[in-house]
Image (cartoon, rainbow, N blue to C red; front, top):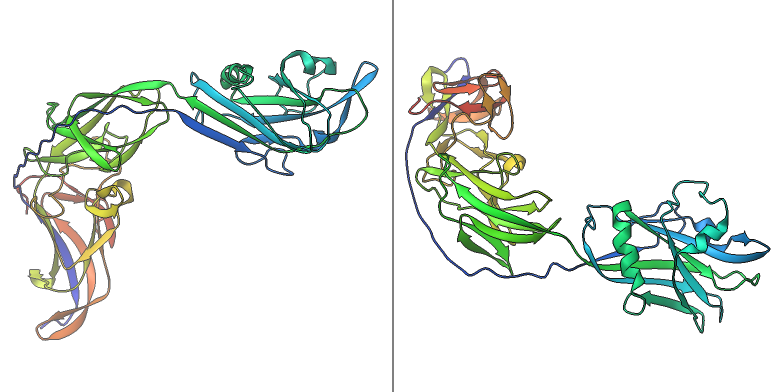
Length: 413
Protein backbone atom coordinates (compact mmCIF):
# COMPACT_ATOMS: atom_id res chain seq x y z
CA UNK A 1 0.00 0.00 0.00
CA UNK A 2 1.17 3.55 -0.68
CA UNK A 3 0.31 5.52 2.46
CA UNK A 4 2.48 8.47 1.54
CA UNK A 5 2.38 9.39 -2.12
CA UNK A 6 5.91 10.41 -3.18
CA UNK A 7 7.89 9.61 -6.27
CA UNK A 8 11.29 10.46 -7.68
CA UNK A 9 13.02 10.09 -11.02
CA UNK A 10 16.12 8.17 -12.03
CA UNK A 11 18.02 8.77 -15.27
CA UNK A 12 19.64 5.74 -16.85
CA UNK A 13 21.66 5.45 -20.01
CA UNK A 14 23.90 2.99 -21.80
CA UNK A 15 26.09 2.98 -24.89
CA UNK A 16 24.84 1.69 -28.23
CA UNK A 17 26.57 2.28 -31.57
CA UNK A 18 25.00 2.53 -34.97
CA UNK A 19 26.14 3.73 -38.40
CA UNK A 20 24.69 4.61 -41.80
CA UNK A 21 26.27 6.13 -44.91
CA UNK A 22 24.51 8.09 -47.62
CA UNK A 23 26.18 9.62 -50.68
CA UNK A 24 24.89 11.77 -53.52
CA UNK A 25 27.12 13.67 -55.95
CA UNK A 26 25.77 16.54 -58.05
CA UNK A 27 27.46 19.19 -60.14
CA UNK A 28 27.68 22.69 -58.63
CA UNK A 29 25.53 25.52 -59.90
CA UNK A 30 26.30 29.19 -60.44
CA UNK A 31 24.21 32.02 -59.10
CA UNK A 32 23.65 35.68 -59.92
CA UNK A 33 24.13 37.70 -56.76
CA UNK A 34 22.63 40.97 -58.02
CA UNK A 35 20.20 42.44 -55.54
CA UNK A 36 17.81 45.34 -55.47
CA UNK A 37 17.47 47.63 -52.45
CA UNK A 38 14.55 50.05 -52.35
CA UNK A 39 14.14 53.03 -50.04
CA UNK A 40 10.94 55.03 -49.65
CA UNK A 41 9.81 58.27 -48.08
CA UNK A 42 8.37 58.29 -44.58
CA UNK A 43 6.12 61.32 -44.63
CA UNK A 44 6.48 63.72 -41.74
CA UNK A 45 9.42 62.02 -40.04
CA UNK A 46 12.80 63.61 -39.61
CA UNK A 47 14.45 60.21 -39.60
CA UNK A 48 12.05 58.00 -41.48
CA UNK A 49 11.44 54.31 -41.83
CA UNK A 50 12.93 52.17 -44.58
CA UNK A 51 16.38 53.73 -44.07
CA UNK A 52 15.29 57.14 -45.36
CA UNK A 53 16.44 60.26 -43.57
CA UNK A 54 14.85 63.50 -44.68
CA UNK A 55 14.13 66.90 -43.23
CA UNK A 56 10.61 67.56 -44.45
CA UNK A 57 10.84 71.20 -43.42
CA UNK A 58 13.40 71.78 -46.15
CA UNK A 59 11.04 70.82 -48.94
CA UNK A 60 9.85 74.44 -49.48
CA UNK A 61 12.50 76.59 -47.84
CA UNK A 62 14.41 79.35 -49.67
CA UNK A 63 18.17 79.58 -49.28
CA UNK A 64 19.97 82.63 -50.66
CA UNK A 65 22.75 82.38 -53.20
CA UNK A 66 24.40 85.78 -53.35
CA UNK A 67 21.68 88.22 -54.41
CA UNK A 68 19.35 85.59 -55.81
CA UNK A 69 17.50 82.59 -54.53
CA UNK A 70 17.14 78.93 -55.45
CA UNK A 71 14.72 76.50 -53.90
CA UNK A 72 16.03 73.06 -52.94
CA UNK A 73 15.38 70.01 -50.79
CA UNK A 74 17.97 67.71 -49.23
CA UNK A 75 17.06 64.03 -49.09
CA UNK A 76 19.24 61.45 -47.36
CA UNK A 77 19.06 57.67 -47.26
CA UNK A 78 20.98 55.55 -44.77
CA UNK A 79 22.75 52.62 -46.44
CA UNK A 80 24.30 50.55 -43.64
CA UNK A 81 26.87 47.91 -44.39
CA UNK A 82 24.37 45.24 -43.37
CA UNK A 83 22.13 46.33 -46.24
CA UNK A 84 24.64 47.07 -49.00
CA UNK A 85 28.14 45.98 -47.99
CA UNK A 86 31.12 48.24 -48.63
CA UNK A 87 32.89 47.08 -51.76
CA UNK A 88 29.66 46.23 -53.58
CA UNK A 89 29.44 47.05 -57.27
CA UNK A 90 26.61 49.47 -58.03
CA UNK A 91 24.91 48.42 -61.27
CA UNK A 92 21.87 50.67 -61.45
CA UNK A 93 20.35 53.63 -59.56
CA UNK A 94 16.96 55.25 -59.98
CA UNK A 95 15.80 58.37 -58.14
CA UNK A 96 12.07 59.00 -58.37
CA UNK A 97 9.84 61.68 -56.83
CA UNK A 98 6.67 63.72 -57.37
CA UNK A 99 7.20 67.29 -58.56
CA UNK A 100 4.40 69.85 -58.66
CA UNK A 101 5.90 72.90 -60.36
CA UNK A 102 5.17 72.93 -64.06
CA UNK A 103 7.91 73.65 -66.64
CA UNK A 104 10.65 74.62 -64.22
CA UNK A 105 13.84 72.63 -64.71
CA UNK A 106 15.57 70.81 -61.89
CA UNK A 107 19.20 70.12 -61.13
CA UNK A 108 20.28 67.14 -59.01
CA UNK A 109 23.36 67.45 -56.81
CA UNK A 110 24.98 65.18 -54.26
CA UNK A 111 26.88 65.89 -51.07
CA UNK A 112 28.50 64.00 -48.18
CA UNK A 113 26.65 66.10 -45.61
CA UNK A 114 24.69 64.24 -42.93
CA UNK A 115 21.40 66.11 -42.66
CA UNK A 116 20.56 64.38 -39.37
CA UNK A 117 23.14 66.71 -37.82
CA UNK A 118 21.71 70.19 -37.43
CA UNK A 119 22.30 72.94 -38.20
CA UNK A 120 23.53 72.10 -41.67
CA UNK A 121 27.30 72.64 -41.92
CA UNK A 122 27.24 75.19 -44.74
CA UNK A 123 28.96 78.56 -44.42
CA UNK A 124 27.83 79.48 -47.92
CA UNK A 125 25.05 77.66 -49.68
CA UNK A 126 27.04 77.88 -52.88
CA UNK A 127 28.75 74.78 -51.49
CA UNK A 128 25.59 72.85 -52.26
CA UNK A 129 25.95 73.47 -55.96
CA UNK A 130 29.45 72.06 -56.39
CA UNK A 131 28.62 68.42 -57.23
CA UNK A 132 26.09 68.31 -60.02
CA UNK A 133 24.81 64.97 -61.31
CA UNK A 134 22.33 66.06 -63.97
CA UNK A 135 19.68 68.53 -65.12
CA UNK A 136 16.16 67.51 -66.03
CA UNK A 137 13.21 69.47 -67.38
CA UNK A 138 9.87 68.00 -66.32
CA UNK A 139 7.15 69.06 -68.74
CA UNK A 140 4.16 68.58 -66.48
CA UNK A 141 3.21 68.02 -62.88
CA UNK A 142 3.86 64.39 -61.98
CA UNK A 143 6.47 61.78 -61.37
CA UNK A 144 10.10 62.47 -62.20
CA UNK A 145 12.28 59.41 -62.75
CA UNK A 146 16.04 59.76 -63.22
CA UNK A 147 18.32 56.76 -63.52
CA UNK A 148 21.91 55.77 -64.17
CA UNK A 149 21.15 54.34 -67.60
CA UNK A 150 20.84 57.97 -68.72
CA UNK A 151 23.11 59.59 -66.14
CA UNK A 152 25.90 57.16 -65.29
CA UNK A 153 27.27 59.45 -62.59
CA UNK A 154 24.53 58.13 -60.28
CA UNK A 155 26.38 54.80 -60.06
CA UNK A 156 29.65 56.52 -59.17
CA UNK A 157 27.95 58.64 -56.51
CA UNK A 158 26.40 55.58 -54.86
CA UNK A 159 29.63 53.60 -55.13
CA UNK A 160 31.56 56.35 -53.35
CA UNK A 161 28.84 56.85 -50.74
CA UNK A 162 28.90 53.29 -49.40
CA UNK A 163 31.85 53.97 -47.13
CA UNK A 164 29.79 56.71 -45.41
CA UNK A 165 26.77 54.40 -44.99
CA UNK A 166 24.52 57.11 -46.46
CA UNK A 167 23.83 59.04 -49.63
CA UNK A 168 22.50 62.59 -49.80
CA UNK A 169 20.85 64.14 -52.85
CA UNK A 170 19.90 67.77 -53.34
CA UNK A 171 16.98 68.44 -55.68
CA UNK A 172 17.22 72.08 -56.70
CA UNK A 173 15.20 74.44 -58.87
CA UNK A 174 17.41 75.25 -61.86
CA UNK A 175 16.01 78.75 -61.77
CA UNK A 176 16.23 81.78 -59.53
CA UNK A 177 12.57 82.77 -59.76
CA UNK A 178 10.72 83.06 -56.49
CA UNK A 179 8.30 80.21 -57.18
CA UNK A 180 8.50 77.24 -54.82
CA UNK A 181 8.27 73.74 -56.21
CA UNK A 182 7.34 70.87 -53.97
CA UNK A 183 9.21 67.56 -54.08
CA UNK A 184 7.39 64.71 -52.37
CA UNK A 185 7.31 60.92 -52.07
CA UNK A 186 10.87 60.28 -53.22
CA UNK A 187 12.13 56.74 -53.61
CA UNK A 188 15.53 55.33 -54.41
CA UNK A 189 16.19 52.01 -56.12
CA UNK A 190 19.69 50.52 -56.19
CA UNK A 191 20.71 47.36 -58.00
CA UNK A 192 24.06 46.08 -56.78
CA UNK A 193 26.35 43.09 -56.68
CA UNK A 194 27.77 42.48 -53.19
CA UNK A 195 31.40 41.49 -52.77
CA UNK A 196 31.89 37.75 -52.72
CA UNK A 197 33.23 35.40 -50.07
CA UNK A 198 34.63 31.94 -50.77
CA UNK A 199 33.47 29.44 -48.14
CA UNK A 200 34.76 25.89 -47.77
CA UNK A 201 32.01 23.67 -46.33
CA UNK A 202 33.20 20.63 -44.37
CA UNK A 203 31.71 17.84 -42.27
CA UNK A 204 33.93 16.26 -39.60
CA UNK A 205 33.92 13.49 -37.04
CA UNK A 206 35.02 14.38 -33.51
CA UNK A 207 38.50 13.15 -34.54
CA UNK A 208 38.71 15.97 -37.10
CA UNK A 209 38.48 13.62 -40.10
CA UNK A 210 36.28 14.86 -42.95
CA UNK A 211 33.56 12.57 -44.27
CA UNK A 212 30.37 12.40 -46.29
CA UNK A 213 28.44 15.23 -47.86
CA UNK A 214 26.73 18.49 -46.86
CA UNK A 215 23.55 19.79 -48.51
CA UNK A 216 23.14 23.32 -49.87
CA UNK A 217 19.61 24.58 -50.54
CA UNK A 218 19.16 25.51 -54.20
CA UNK A 219 15.98 25.92 -56.21
CA UNK A 220 13.70 24.31 -53.64
CA UNK A 221 15.83 21.37 -52.46
CA UNK A 222 19.10 20.46 -50.79
CA UNK A 223 21.89 19.39 -53.14
CA UNK A 224 24.55 17.26 -51.44
CA UNK A 225 28.24 17.82 -52.22
CA UNK A 226 31.37 16.23 -50.80
CA UNK A 227 32.92 17.64 -47.64
CA UNK A 228 35.50 20.24 -48.59
CA UNK A 229 33.46 21.77 -51.41
CA UNK A 230 34.10 25.48 -52.04
CA UNK A 231 31.26 27.93 -52.67
CA UNK A 232 31.37 31.59 -53.64
CA UNK A 233 28.57 33.65 -52.08
CA UNK A 234 27.71 37.32 -51.88
CA UNK A 235 28.53 38.86 -48.50
CA UNK A 236 25.34 39.18 -46.40
CA UNK A 237 23.72 36.37 -48.37
CA UNK A 238 21.71 33.94 -46.27
CA UNK A 239 22.43 30.37 -47.35
CA UNK A 240 20.79 27.18 -46.06
CA UNK A 241 22.93 24.13 -45.29
CA UNK A 242 22.06 20.66 -44.07
CA UNK A 243 24.47 18.19 -42.50
CA UNK A 244 23.88 14.47 -42.58
CA UNK A 245 20.79 13.75 -40.51
CA UNK A 246 21.53 10.12 -39.56
CA UNK A 247 24.16 8.56 -37.32
CA UNK A 248 27.49 7.88 -39.03
CA UNK A 249 30.34 5.94 -37.43
CA UNK A 250 28.50 6.12 -34.10
CA UNK A 251 28.37 9.94 -34.27
CA UNK A 252 25.65 12.46 -35.09
CA UNK A 253 25.36 16.17 -35.85
CA UNK A 254 26.18 18.54 -32.98
CA UNK A 255 26.97 22.05 -34.32
CA UNK A 256 28.17 24.40 -37.06
CA UNK A 257 31.53 26.08 -36.40
CA UNK A 258 31.36 25.04 -32.73
CA UNK A 259 29.05 27.85 -31.59
CA UNK A 260 27.65 29.40 -34.79
CA UNK A 261 24.51 27.25 -34.83
CA UNK A 262 23.05 24.09 -33.31
CA UNK A 263 20.28 23.55 -35.84
CA UNK A 264 20.30 21.20 -38.81
CA UNK A 265 19.39 22.40 -41.33
CA UNK A 266 20.06 26.09 -40.65
CA UNK A 267 20.15 29.42 -42.47
CA UNK A 268 23.67 30.82 -42.28
CA UNK A 269 24.47 34.46 -43.02
CA UNK A 270 27.62 34.84 -45.09
CA UNK A 271 29.90 37.48 -43.63
CA UNK A 272 33.32 38.76 -44.57
CA UNK A 273 36.12 36.39 -43.49
CA UNK A 274 33.76 33.42 -43.11
CA UNK A 275 36.32 31.27 -44.88
CA UNK A 276 35.02 27.90 -43.72
CA UNK A 277 31.81 26.36 -42.40
CA UNK A 278 32.32 23.12 -40.51
CA UNK A 279 29.70 20.63 -39.38
CA UNK A 280 30.95 18.95 -36.18
CA UNK A 281 29.77 15.47 -35.23
CA UNK A 282 30.03 13.94 -31.76
CA UNK A 283 29.53 10.43 -30.40
CA UNK A 284 25.89 9.50 -29.77
CA UNK A 285 25.10 7.33 -26.71
CA UNK A 286 21.93 5.48 -25.79
CA UNK A 287 20.17 6.85 -22.73
CA UNK A 288 16.86 6.87 -20.90
CA UNK A 289 14.81 9.02 -18.55
CA UNK A 290 12.53 7.05 -16.25
CA UNK A 291 9.75 7.84 -13.79
CA UNK A 292 10.00 5.87 -10.53
CA UNK A 293 7.56 5.76 -7.62
CA UNK A 294 8.52 5.17 -4.01
CA UNK A 295 10.22 1.86 -3.30
CA UNK A 296 11.79 2.07 -6.80
CA UNK A 297 8.60 0.99 -8.54
CA UNK A 298 8.73 1.98 -12.21
CA UNK A 299 5.70 4.02 -13.23
CA UNK A 300 3.82 3.00 -16.37
CA UNK A 301 1.76 6.19 -16.40
CA UNK A 302 2.21 9.76 -15.32
CA UNK A 303 4.28 12.35 -17.15
CA UNK A 304 7.83 13.61 -17.17
CA UNK A 305 9.28 16.07 -19.66
CA UNK A 306 12.48 16.35 -21.64
CA UNK A 307 13.98 19.16 -23.69
CA UNK A 308 16.44 17.88 -26.32
CA UNK A 309 18.04 20.56 -28.56
CA UNK A 310 18.90 17.94 -31.20
CA UNK A 311 15.49 16.29 -31.57
CA UNK A 312 14.32 16.81 -35.16
CA UNK A 313 10.69 17.71 -34.49
CA UNK A 314 9.80 20.75 -36.59
CA UNK A 315 8.89 20.74 -40.27
CA UNK A 316 8.90 23.69 -42.66
CA UNK A 317 9.16 24.23 -46.40
CA UNK A 318 12.81 23.14 -46.43
CA UNK A 319 12.27 19.95 -44.43
CA UNK A 320 12.53 18.44 -40.97
CA UNK A 321 15.02 19.90 -38.51
CA UNK A 322 15.85 20.27 -34.83
CA UNK A 323 15.27 23.46 -32.86
CA UNK A 324 18.68 23.92 -31.23
CA UNK A 325 18.56 26.62 -28.56
CA UNK A 326 14.80 26.96 -29.13
CA UNK A 327 14.00 23.35 -28.18
CA UNK A 328 10.59 22.68 -26.65
CA UNK A 329 9.40 20.30 -23.93
CA UNK A 330 8.30 16.79 -24.88
CA UNK A 331 6.03 14.90 -22.51
CA UNK A 332 6.04 11.10 -22.02
CA UNK A 333 5.75 8.60 -19.19
CA UNK A 334 9.42 7.86 -19.85
CA UNK A 335 12.04 8.38 -22.56
CA UNK A 336 14.12 5.66 -24.20
CA UNK A 337 16.83 7.73 -25.86
CA UNK A 338 18.32 4.98 -27.99
CA UNK A 339 20.41 5.74 -31.06
CA UNK A 340 17.76 4.01 -33.17
CA UNK A 341 14.97 6.23 -31.81
CA UNK A 342 13.92 9.65 -33.08
CA UNK A 343 16.22 11.12 -30.43
CA UNK A 344 19.26 9.34 -31.93
CA UNK A 345 20.85 9.02 -28.49
CA UNK A 346 22.45 11.68 -26.32
CA UNK A 347 25.82 13.47 -26.10
CA UNK A 348 28.08 13.01 -23.09
CA UNK A 349 29.29 16.03 -21.11
CA UNK A 350 27.11 18.33 -23.19
CA UNK A 351 26.72 21.85 -21.85
CA UNK A 352 28.70 21.58 -18.60
CA UNK A 353 32.36 22.40 -17.93
CA UNK A 354 33.64 20.38 -14.98
CA UNK A 355 36.69 22.59 -14.52
CA UNK A 356 34.83 25.92 -14.36
CA UNK A 357 31.55 24.35 -13.16
CA UNK A 358 29.69 26.55 -15.65
CA UNK A 359 26.60 25.47 -17.58
CA UNK A 360 26.50 26.74 -21.17
CA UNK A 361 23.63 26.03 -23.57
CA UNK A 362 22.73 23.99 -25.39
CA UNK A 363 22.17 21.23 -22.83
CA UNK A 364 19.51 18.67 -22.00
CA UNK A 365 16.79 19.57 -19.51
CA UNK A 366 14.28 17.51 -17.52
CA UNK A 367 11.07 18.58 -15.86
CA UNK A 368 8.52 17.00 -13.52
CA UNK A 369 4.92 17.77 -12.70
CA UNK A 370 3.88 17.80 -9.05
CA UNK A 371 1.44 16.77 -7.87
CA UNK A 372 0.05 14.55 -10.57
CA UNK A 373 -2.39 11.65 -10.56
CA UNK A 374 -0.85 8.26 -11.40
CA UNK A 375 -2.76 5.01 -11.73
CA UNK A 376 -1.16 2.21 -9.72
CA UNK A 377 -2.47 -1.00 -8.16
CA UNK A 378 -5.97 -0.42 -9.47
CA UNK A 379 -6.28 3.11 -8.10
CA UNK A 380 -5.40 6.65 -9.11
CA UNK A 381 -3.41 8.53 -6.50
CA UNK A 382 -1.71 11.92 -6.35
CA UNK A 383 2.06 11.63 -6.28
CA UNK A 384 4.50 14.36 -5.38
CA UNK A 385 7.94 15.03 -6.75
CA UNK A 386 10.86 14.03 -4.52
CA UNK A 387 14.10 14.56 -6.46
CA UNK A 388 16.13 13.69 -9.53
CA UNK A 389 18.73 10.95 -9.24
CA UNK A 390 21.12 9.36 -11.67
CA UNK A 391 24.26 7.27 -11.68
CA UNK A 392 26.50 8.67 -14.38
CA UNK A 393 24.40 11.83 -14.72
CA UNK A 394 24.66 15.21 -13.01
CA UNK A 395 21.97 17.80 -12.36
CA UNK A 396 22.22 21.52 -11.90
CA UNK A 397 19.50 21.41 -9.21
CA UNK A 398 18.36 17.88 -8.39
CA UNK A 399 15.70 19.14 -5.96
CA UNK A 400 14.02 21.39 -8.54
CA UNK A 401 11.12 20.31 -10.69
CA UNK A 402 12.99 21.62 -13.73
CA UNK A 403 16.75 21.35 -14.17
CA UNK A 404 19.51 20.97 -16.75
CA UNK A 405 21.13 17.55 -16.81
CA UNK A 406 24.43 16.34 -18.19
CA UNK A 407 25.13 12.72 -19.14
CA UNK A 408 28.72 12.15 -18.11
CA UNK A 409 29.48 8.45 -18.12
CA UNK A 410 29.10 5.60 -20.56
CA UNK A 411 27.21 2.47 -19.50
CA UNK A 412 25.81 4.26 -16.45
CA UNK A 413 22.63 3.28 -14.65
